[in-house]
Length: 621
Image 1: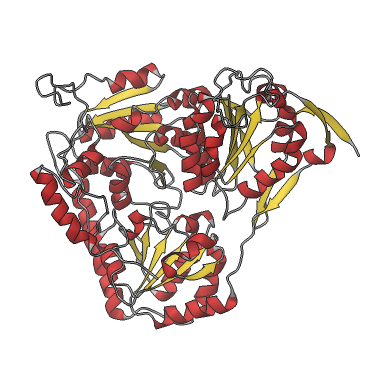
Image 2: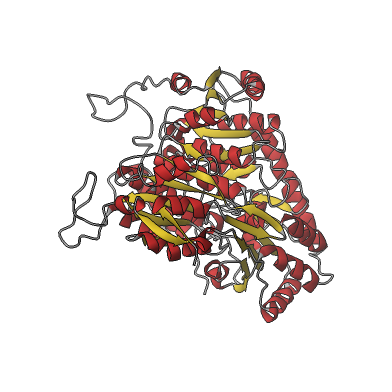
């Protein structure tokens, strides 16, 4: 058998660059390269290999280990999970800094390969720098923390173990149902050890991404349920977009007249102005989508996890006779809400259902109601885009300016705070990749790193990163990477001197906005209620190398966006908004527990309302 003598680090890099995926006859290289930050736990192993093969496998230097995983996840999402990045770090804080990003990738079902360094396999020199010791076992390391948030986890204690571990990692990474973060913990001494690897390990491998079909009897039953329904509703999730099923969805709803409501991940499944698109559904949904959900006798959930925001904490579906059809490649999700499970690819299933429902159409009264809801919502969006609020503009007006200025092919990215909810409702989306929200984990700090991953996936599009000051302050460093690599971002930095989203939630739960503004401590009261902190966000962004434009009005914001579009590299447009002026909720509710007993009047009142609202929650058995 032909062999190649390589270090384990070299063998891993050689293997990764030979991995390909194919779907519908289109083949592409799976790994676009590797992100990393070097330390003593990986510099001489994986680091040496990346240096040796720099001409064939691209390495990207990042500034923060958490953000590199966010960038990789965004890249994978933009590529419909058909391409990915690997991420390497040293042992210790470098490794554990990736945990937040890894959790986000797994929750959002996005493929990311994590290669953290690990403690010495020989144990001779233990405890090494940054090693976590345990009196109960010598086999623990901080990398064990990745186990519950990884879809596959392994510690490679001998160089030959990668011969079986790497194919298993690829099995999970390329699975549309099982994908997420995959962690291979690499002891720093083993990374540098040599082994005679079989040459076959480094041959090109192509993984076919299948389109599994639904069970025929279940599909026929689903067709019967649809034909029997009077007020059906589709919930379009991220699976519609990942499976590239938007054309099939458009054909199905045009044939039947069934309306859709979109989840965060599914927004863009249909253009915002499609006659059957009622817009966002759930906690941050539109009135039409949420009323339709409340009255629906059949809910067709396509490619969605049915999270609490989508189901309004299981209060969204109030029809006592409601039934569910779950279309999902993941069995776990297809069965939710006691649904009729079609464990299958969304694209082929929608095509099959289109044939199965024959000439079924919703009745004229329901169709007229859908049209009315859509018209009313468009009027409401126009109102919120042009409030004329002052002296500071509202967040909805800023969103309106950016949405009306940007082009249909551009991408808007956001993740945390009050903006995701506002964008879910208000952003007028023309295509499946125009709207990019990380809301499975709603991770503060994702925005700029995620924007970089999106731009790397498709440099032809302008990427608008919308980020609040609270989230910006957590993780802005990848501005430097975007400039280093020449991936231009347009960052709209919205400042309200605090955490507006949680401030509103705090007031709603009777906590009066406690500790949600960025203020000095008041020496008399002991609370954080003094003057506002003198944080200069513009100066901070400029110090990272970005071009910075400060807008003070909506008119100057429009001018700033024009400048940003023409600028050659990453530009930050900063604007202050009213902390208190928020977009209302519509026909929905979110379960956030309120203190059952309290000496505070506002908390007591909030609990009374909470008890009342909670009565609408339902089990689906």
